[in-house]
Length: 112
Length: 112
Image (cartoon, rainbow over the protein chains, first blue to last red):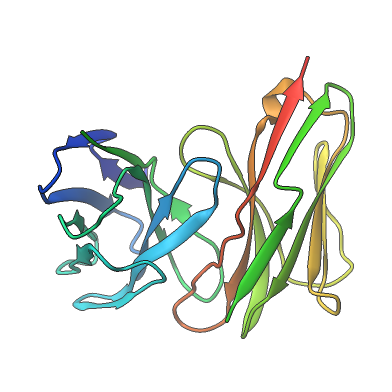
């Protein structure tokens, strides 16, 4: 079955450490997205990519980095420069043209 | 700047009540508007609306779009405790990015 997989589901990080969240899809979608969600709030766009080897900053890109070396994969690195990284992170993919997203099941990151 | 406002932000009702959730938007290059339900993890798709005045229905849920007033509503009749969730409204852009612009969500709690 086609889908989008995020790992790990839960992640704990010490302050000052970089961590990488994985997102893999087998839907053959060109576009992929990373969102952050804080408790009781909507989704805010971090980065998105329309095609391999290309990506753009979203609304809250500071302290994050991404890569898109393969169509299937869009990992997100939360760097030590992100001052408030504790949140729920959602990855999504799309065929584009406003047809909606397929979401992964999310990664909950906690800084300890 | 693209903007999506959902109201109310939170709502508590009892089983059997009917609720109306509101979504107003101001976005450039509007293509469609999507509604998602989010329980604990990934948002799940409810409706995609592209034309004004045409109601979409799925069981006890229905939704309609007004492209002139830039507004959409989501109705839930005879609410059940399983309807408790965050409901997200998201206009989709018609550009190649396929981006969705999410509102802050409405948190619905249905009490027995």
